[in-house]
Length: 247
Image 1: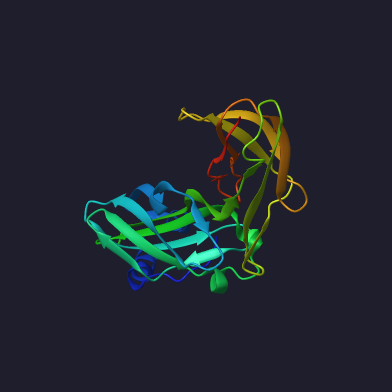
Image 2: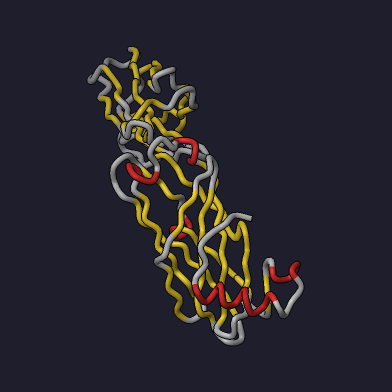
């Protein structure tokens, strides 16, 4: 069990219940308090770049016959990653904790913390019932990504070769720059000039520097783009379509 700082009410609840219940019960629950739902960042992954401070919330819905008094939230992930907050407020059955992450302070030299994270949640009721749940919910902390594309030549004669290049990059928390994401499958997609739908033409892998390059035949006017589906540590990234006029 991970150590964390508990609120004063939580400490009081633990002290009271330690005399009232066996140790095995005191470890996670006392009374009728229960956590019914945990939502991180509105249900979206937490994507962090190289400079901008990221703020997000964790919302815990709980119930108890006396009402909910306070909550203690800790987030932890791979590479000994841990986020805590002292900014947690409860109203009715809902407690919301606000987390602030500055990549240059909280994530320096910490690329290994990207991946699947978990929420440890403790909720204390007004009558000092409580529930403590490890891994009450999971989410992903990801390194922000970018995707570019360039289709050339423009214009091009029908039947000639078009070369489509691009680069997939992601935030690096070692030097706070974007570096190429290597050996990743990326879909090359095409949309006809008067269509709103992209179709996958082929899948291309990034090279050792994150660059992409492939060739196709010029058939008709339209837009070319690269579409990266994302991984556990890195979100999806889609390039804006590059129009090629086919003569």
